[in-house]
Picture 1 (cartoon, rainbow, N blue to C red):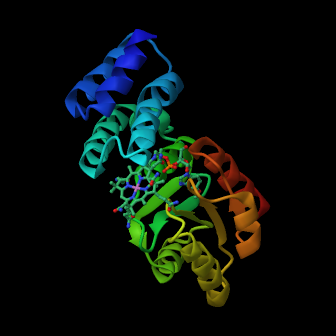
Picture 2: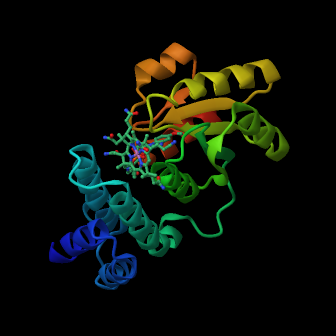
Length: 210
Ligand code: B1M
């Protein structure tokens, strides 16, 4: 589909306004939200990711592509989120301490909201203590941690430990590119999800089991 390819290409070029307009055009032409997300925005971001890895582009290019992704997402977000539905649970969502990546986290947030959760997004670079405090303050059942760096993954273990020491019945779920089910098992996390859509399923499982 040419329009989705155009979204991907403009995202890679960091053309935020153009991406936003094209996403709206795709919706007007009745393309599905998941196609626009997966074959337009996410595809563009993954191509930029590959180029970044091969040193074909550098941080500024990645940042402007990420900004374009956010602009496109602004159009999709209301459609991903359920309207007027009672929350099925509260989730504290954040990127762990030392880690500034938030694109995947934001996607997870959108999917969780779309699945009917109330999401309290505590942002990036979030300490274990802040995760626990936010969960206690808001009466949340689940803390959801994202990490994109192998160097920040160990913070997830600290979150699990902080929840245990606080003695609160909060489930911890984790995800992010370097994170695996094995790692989740190793640190005693209650759940792991490989992508944003499965994150919503996992949060439901954790809330149902509580
Ligand atoms: Co960064 N970066 N980055 N970066 N960056 C990666 C992650 C990297 C793999 C690139 C590379 O070298 N190939 C590499 C990590 C290597 C490693 O640790 N193994 C890396 C590095 C090294 C760095 C810096 C250290 C670079 C530097 O300064 N030298 C630095 C670190 C800064 C910091 O955090 N302290 C850095 C900085 C940046 C930017 C600021 C330039 C920018 C972030 C902008 C932003 O987020 N606002 C950036 C970006 C964009 C990337 C890449 C290119 C793309 C990440 C992304 O957004 N992907 C990335 C390379 C790549 O992935 N190919 C890279 C799209 C996003 C939708 O995917 O976040 O994986 P992702 O989310 C997925 C799943 O993982 C999952 O769902 C999402 C999709 O469905 N998921 C969850 C995520 N969280 C979840 C939580 C869940 C469940 C599922 O439950 C709670």
